[in-house]
Image (tube, rainbow, N blue to C red; front, top):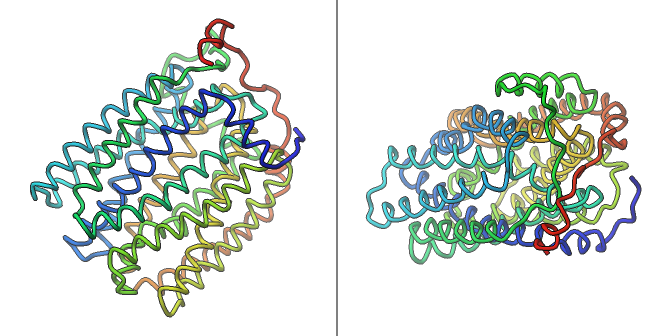
Length: 433
């Protein structure tokens, strides 16, 4: 589908009241989630002074996705995603409230943090596929490219704002208020979800469809593996997830262990990475067409490899921040381009499952690999470890170049089934407005 690109694509998506309500609540919640993540990372580093332990908590935060998200993706193709997200948000509010109280009372140790990090990881993993698959139910298909770009933009703006606020709060008042802020953000998002209404419904499952969840997951895996565009794209994203996408989980070790910059250095690094991703997300959101997105997807890998190697040899914090900006920019380019291509080319009845597979890759890959990278960083030092990651990223780029045409041909075309397929009755649509 060919459309003009520009700011009009963003304003058209935001003119939809339900998408605007959903995205506004989600954005405020994401700011406080980043504050929470910085606070947890700082507590872990303060308790252990170990990059390996940072990797362990990255694993606890994200590893549940490996088991939960495929089931959650199959559920997203079966049930009301909006109601499901509402339930998970309530759980996240309670989790943040209790943890902030324990931190304020100085009752937190590694065991307590493990329990709460695992809880957060499980609930967040269950929510992700529904969060991705709900977007086509709020907007018409022609607005999806802008919508997914705006999703990334809000994520990365929050990634810039949240850590900076967290750095100030942690320095002045400690980690408990930063964690409590996440309870406030989750509550705001919960209220926004109450006022969000579905405008479009995806096609109903046929009566003869499988009633077995595991069979649904198997069908989705088979579909993704055999698809000429989805299969190679997933392979590329998986490889990147266990290599350069692990770097943001190691920022506390880089900030304090390598550059001796403390909590403020960590806040700067996390925020600068968010700024780079934010700039790229604006570019994606302004696109009005899908053509050429595969080229950007593959080229971004080469630039990312250069930035990682340069980071390994950065002599001071300021040159490291430049490299981290480029890493944030290209990582966003690859992730958002990949997600947009997958959601554009996938069949509608597989949307939730493919979204869940993407979420598994983007969450579990870095988490699992961060433990290995953290151990390597403790054993050999972070600069040599980053050098190896950069070299291996070049190898992924070379593999992707050979499959670029196949991915573009299968994912940049107009799919046979368009979405949203069924619009809600006029009275419901009118009420939603």
